[in-house]
Amino acid sequence: MKIPELLAPGGSLEKLKTAILYGADAVYVGGESFSLRTAAENFTFEEMKEGLSFAHERGKKVYLTANIIPHNKDIKEFAQYIKEIAPLGFDAVLVADPGMMDVIKENAPELPIHISTQANNVNYKSAEFWYKQGAKRVVLAREMSMDEIREIRENTPEDLELEAFVHGAMCVSYSGRCLLSNYLTSRDANQGACSHPCRWNYTLMEETRPGEYMPVFENERGTFIFNSKDLCMIEHIPEIVESGITSLKLEGRVKTSYYVATVVKAYREELDRYIKDPENYKFDPKQLDELCKVSHRPYSTGFYYGKPSDKGQVYTSSSYIREYDLIGMVEDYDEETGIATISQRNRFFVGDEIEVLEPGKPFFTQKVEYMENEKGESIESAPHAQMILKMPMKEPVSNAAMLRKKREE
Image (tube, rainbow, N blue to C red; front, top):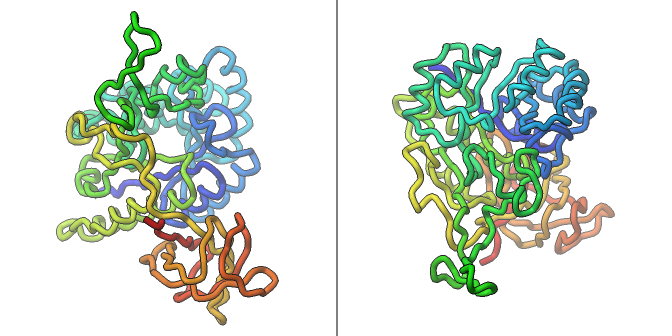
């Protein structure tokens, strides 16, 4: 059995480190240019160096995304960009355009190239074409069934790596190549600036009756006709591994560090349990419970088991389901006293029931019995953003631990 890579989003240096500490084998990141996520914090050159060093010291990989659909003005700038990032040691660069691929081959031929999902790879001849051009990996379009993926694997060279999304947001447009944002807001989705108009509330207006807005169907909340459910394949790890996918991709460069930690941890643990004993493997429903503790839309299996039906959309709201809040990050822990130093992320109080999440261990629940501020004064609440406080912990914790609390009904 070939063990697939678990590939996580790294929208910032903190998220890159979080992903690796919580179990990712590799992380994909964007620089300040040529990345399809301008809403992400993205990486300066200094942060790239630090992130690469952090990952490589731990035997992990970092891939750089440069998968915009470029215009003429982008080409010369990209050539200079590639010359500058080439010495940093990225493990691959993702592109979606053959011109961008040529620029890399001309200016940094030693850099491995991955072909982005933006290139709409949905058949084995397309994958084979990119392989012949020198691509090491092809990222498959989200619009692929499990059977189609197996067929691509069976009809492509063994050393061509296949990457596929297994978790995260889905796009109403084919492989994300959308013009709706450009048309409605002049923000180009294919340049990384999508305004997500697919999630908006729409009504219908008849040409001869301007100003009369009618719902597409009767619902007092409106109609969200392009609002896809999120992808979640954690219940189908055996089929994914057996399909021959090389890398399991988690979406979410604009998500929070808490989101990254929770999702990576769940997939890491479930993947490891299957690899350890595939014959006796059974899915652990607690992992799906964990994935429901992050901000998400209702889950589906996307295109893996056929094209989504009308049940693949959310018609009533574009809001996320958010039942838990991250309330703190552990900055330090004193083993002798059992006291943790916490950086606050959301308000919480003495008496609150909280959960503590950290790498490689089940989460545990405890009550907040006591807190003190930086001056050593007892406090009843932590109301200020990123304030530093101290509190006793029920169990030892690492500096990567996170504190979360269920939202009140």
